[in-house]
Image (cartoon, rainbow over all chains, first blue to last red; front, side, top):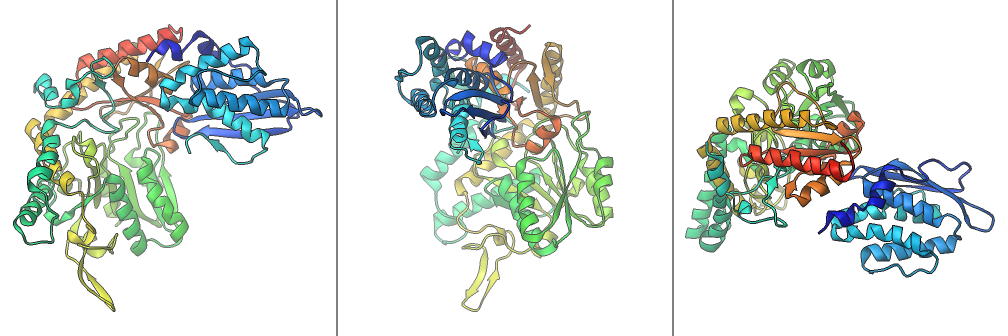
Length: 154
Length: 406
């Protein structure tokens, strides 16, 4: 195991200064997620426009560096994408965190993929995978407009 | 007391953990096991195994005697007045559930109050919470003060004429506060209120004397006392065990079973239904012997020295914030570092072989009060040394370096 792979500069930087850590005005969908055992929680706010594109996405919450960085990078990369494109990106990211070596989606540019791949270090820390996936599962709930609180510890 | 020698009795320290010497600072969660305990389980299954209390063949009688010897050892260790006041359970959680269930059935009615504290582990809250639904009782919380303690005065303040039982921890697994149990019990008894003590953290670290404490119930966890998992003890005054209804039904706890009626067994069988964790109970006797050999007073003194050393060292480390400052404190230090989440701390410390716990330590009520979603926690056992504390501090500094803190 290598801590440097887990705590890469990009992760530490996003963890310390998360992007989109606020509440979207006039959001159209939202969902809450938590990891009760860790005490991590996120609340995702999503604003889709008439063409079903993500006009804005933001989050509130707190958690470890991995949780915060993952939410921060996620909100950056899905902005401007169509609803079904967001779903594809979420699935691709979760597949990568679970088993695949690379991201395969064509919807992200190389820079975005590089940022997301920085989170792949959690694969070596099974207890921390749920930190990296919390915001992603919560985004899925928001897209489905689910009122249930998402928990990655089920 | 020679800690190096004592440490050699624990095989876990013979091996490297991820190429590091293990610095085990998670004993409040569960302690490591000395060789004699591990060997006892193997030997019992290899040479002496039989179920207890039923058959009359040689092995069954021998196993029954061994099983009962542990009961006698526990009785002496905690100075209970009667061997039948010792009930084996699968853990302290089951011990508390047993009391909540049976005491609740018989003595709690709508509007009655159970007084617990904000320091309680979930296992001394959730079992009582069940009775909110089934019996419509209320649960009152004695509040924790800024030092992370619950005082006798606070308990007195929360007692009303509806208070039917008081349930308190002996030693907080988060702030380390040692509660004034004897004084709480004495006051409660002056109002005819029984007291249950969650002794999970008390039993491995403090000298216990049930007749002196005079509490009505005391719950003990075996695996935190250098013993096996799957074994706990409920100490209860005999009058309660005779008075309360049985908990679980099954074999072993009955006297006579007819289609029209059932009579229950004598103590302690009444509360030990089904085949118990026989090997673990028998091996637990070795844990008691291990503690007795070193002497609990020596363990207390050693852990106090470690605690003072650690509080001093971590106190000097900027950005480390120790949670609570109780006057009377056991070997537990919960802390936060400004700018680093406890889970990140735990993962980074682990890389150096330093095993701590991060999270709410099954005390969400307390963490909510503290306004913290999680804390990091280092807790001590008999095998810890000042070198372990130095390594903890060094690894914390490494953590700060990784997060660019100074």
